[in-house]
Length: 445
Ligand SMILES: Nc1nc2c(ncn2[C@@H]2O[C@H](COP(=O)(O)OP(=O)(O)O)[C@@H](O)[C@H]2O)c(=O)[nH]1
Ligand SMILES: [Mg+2]
Image 1: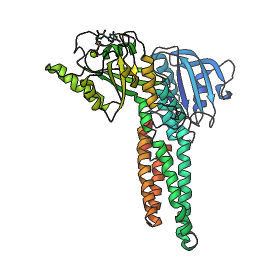
Image 2 (image 1 turned 180 degrees about the horizontal axis):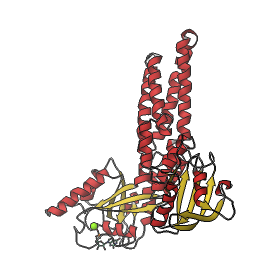
Image 3 (image 1 turned 60 degrees about the horizontal axis):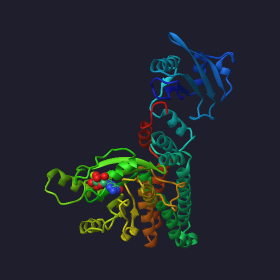
Image 4 (image 1 turned 180 degrees about the vertical axis):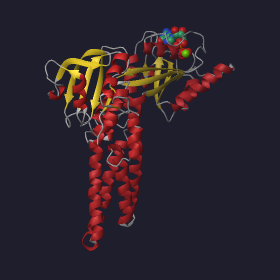
């Protein structure tokens, strides 16, 4: 027997309104015990999806509130749901919840509403995870990725791949039953069918790097010789005096990280100590940290002077980052711009010119026109992990098909691939995985 549970769905605190919701077979019955509206004899007669203004009777006080009934299965959870929009406030909202509990509801656990929706087949696991991604998003790109996941984009792609796996599995199994009639033909087409699965899985997996960037941003280290204008650039980008700027070489000793949002994506700028050989112990640590930041970041911005030739120290620094994405940035263009600057971007941190071109360049190195932002983008580590396992299994199946390995062994790889992919949608996810996912949800979700 399903239970009826209740929770506060909005953050607990002083606010204009709070939403308290109830889901389960007794939702309407419990609601009609505590809520009345002049429009109805009893709330049991409420028309689904209609909002009623009325009174909720709590222990020691009443509140004027709105109530709406969503009749299962046409509700978020798939069961009967009643939502109350009462006034906000910690005590008021808690008392409304207490009233529902004392009238027969039990308290919902974390994610219980969404878990019920999943168990009732209203959404897949990845769609449920899309909701969490949207709630936790801090930038527009991540909101969009969460929205696509919540709307079933990834679920559809994975379900389609698994359908093909099932078709191949069925013909391989049939060929084992009728080897003389079918085996040659099935084995002949096997490799190309497996390769199409491999390329579909790899295509989704290849978006993981973009997904990381969407969640965490592009890490950009600004490096260069002292006094070139690195800290001035950080300040110009942020539009405020964050870093100390002086004409004394060696002013910045530690790395300093600040984030801006550009085209919906975070760019994390790391201002570093100017690179030079120094006997100052603290500055030397700063120079080492500058190199470390540059090695671990996504893009190195090497700042040089637009009005003077590239120095031998700068050539030496550049040569250390041959294998990285690097932007040559020529600063102090307000003084002069020499011809060699054509291989980079010219700016004046002092006059705040060229900043937009730099941001656009950084963004275009990751979010270029050929990146399909409306397609699947893997932003969830659990999905990446499942796809990596699916990828390993399908590659093993291809090797098997190539080397005349018995069909029984290929079937094992295909099954592993199917199971790994099914964990994403929830079709093959174990109770443990499901528990773990919903335990990360907030109360009332
Ligand atoms: N003329 C000119 N001076 C600049 C520009 N950017 C920075 N400076 C000056 O260069 C000096 C060093 O700047 P700073 O940002 O501290 O350089 P950092 O050591 O590379 O961080 C300061 O006196 C700045 O005012 C620029 O675009 N044009
Ligand atoms: Mg500095």
